[in-house]
Length: 144
Image (cartoon, rainbow, N blue to C red; front, side, top):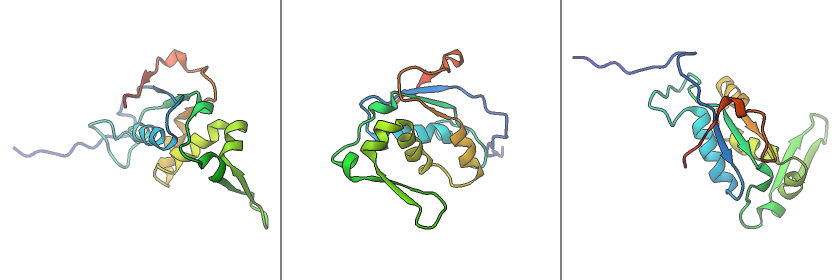
């Protein structure tokens, strides 16, 4: 009897929406859990070249925890595309202004840097508060 390695095909994998409450969680540890679910590595049918992951909803992004003095010292860099257009802003001020961006950046850096990674990022929904418009999908919490 010969065994064949299972390879999932596009559209073959069922999607289960997941939800995470970011309140009080460390940014890096939270991003690892989210990236794992987005990539589909939590499933036995994981296939590297197919999107096997689940859409993830993150709530309370404004209450995510940065350990040590990262909030004041760590800088978010953004390049505008113009000469001398490097913009730098501390994580503390970004967390005040747009808390979703910090989680999105952390997760994006943990995903593959290709077309598949961009598809995975489209399945990440981050909200600063506790409310989100995805209640109809009946999301299940991420265990971890």
